[in-house]
Length: 218
Image (cartoon, rainbow, N blue to C red; front, side, top):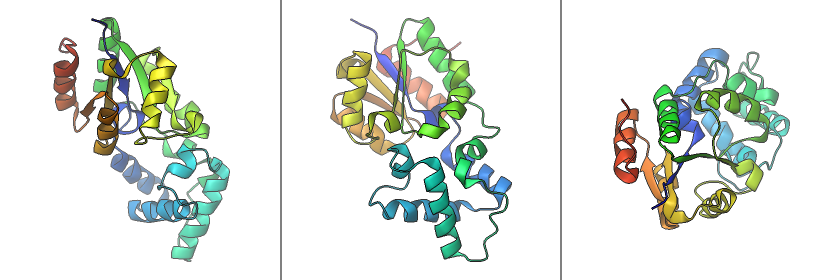
């Protein structure tokens, strides 16, 4: 029986949790997570999409999105201090100092060493590629990368999993997704994938071993 292909999400699996990144951004810029999330939703609502979809589907460039964020933040709070924020090159500032999740990096490398295929399946942003690729560099070479901003569809749309299967040449039954969002895991399962809902490192490693037979990390 062929080895499964293990697909790792980037944000929240190979990278730190999103809430941790919001807190870090708050510390650097003074903009609170609540302010950011409200503005994200407002910009996306103007296009009739989910909060991060304008970037993750490349509906707006980073610079266009950044100008919209500044506009809606100032509309909501005319006195807001945005002097420390650089929205038109948001990714550079957002990912500053971010390091990969060492346990998930080790898990990916361990899987490759045991003959498993490894991919990255992520909702991501065109202009952020240099930053996130640098973060996941410790994983080493992977078999396939599928980005929402490239294929034009984002999780949890089931179509992105079909695109991933085609890109990697791997049938659904051989695909396993590790993702921090339950709705993405449910969508993957709906098209015949297996999935591990990432909640913490230890549980994820244990559940992945149960699904794939990958030996435990030493």
